Image (tube, rainbow, N blue to C red; front, side):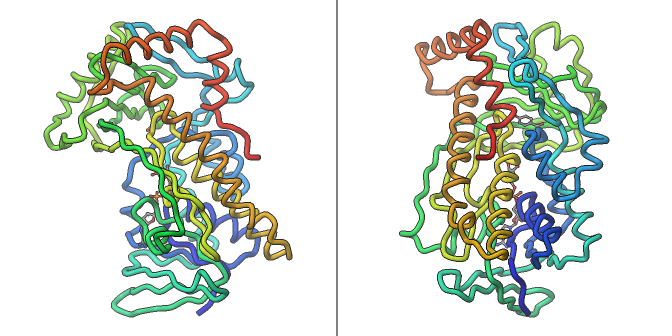
Length: 389
Ligand code: APR
Ligand code: PHB
């Protein structure tokens, strides 16, 4: 068996790359260790930058997003019991699209099925070989049978815990990591969002975020400790804590209901350098993680894939220039998004170790932000997404 690009992982990165390559006539196969239902069951962020929207359109999967997604022109920062709007559109001329990662994944999966490209779900013991030479291959077990596929390139789109980064010799990769001393407890419910735009709340009890998936489905979060368990949080406890952190007028309008999903996510910043090892390329969460404040994870995954796609297309047209530039181009954008996500996380959360000086700094920065159009524009241009250079 032989393919041009073997893609490991069927999250948004792998599926988007597969779809873009398929449209460009580049043969590819996707190997995913989980089932399709499992992949669709993971609830993640849902704010798309224009560049991500454009890439989904280019992949031919934008129709439902444009019909059902919610374009947002701004969001609110809340602190000291008051809300302050950041006018994204007024400040940058751009907006963001609220459309869940689950829906993006579903649209990409449907398109892949329709295009009859090969995907193997529930592939066990996936292994990548020979990427430092000219003849890479991938191996996996399916239905008890060991299979091998030769390829030109391997795309490591297999997330933070994947096999691709782990297969690179230790000395060839440098890892940069910061783990935050808190997590996010998220709850999804079929209740109308408390506000038509997102609200990021800095509160003395900890951060809170009011987000949404549609006009009838809310996604809410509260900062929690890293040693907490979701089973210890009843829906009632969640709603009570979330309500306490909202400004009073907003809390009055909160509609509660049973949770559809509830989970705790740790917060981490992480970057692997470089993102290329011979004929193996890392993209998305395999190469970097951002804390979710600012919703950059899916957007960064999409732009990595955009750069990699360009490189692969040019390679098959006879030039390796863009492929050779992949790691450096992607990392330059990644580090800026890492900076923004770290900054917004630091600005909005309660740090258990932080003393009164740190809290005053946070407060001064929030006051500076709401009083300075220049500061707001900087926040807004990062939030709507920096250009793909
Ligand atoms: N073999 C095959 N597949 C694997 C392996 C393996 N050894 N290890 C992991 N995978 C699969 C996972 O099961 C998962 O479906 O790779 C996929 C990686 O998907 P994601 O973790 O969603 O990563 P990515 O596609 O890069 O998407 C990034 O996800 O975590 C969010 O914030 C992040 O929104 C961003 C997006
Ligand atoms: C979400 O809707 O899940 C979400 C939105 C914005 C964020 C993080 C998560 O910054």
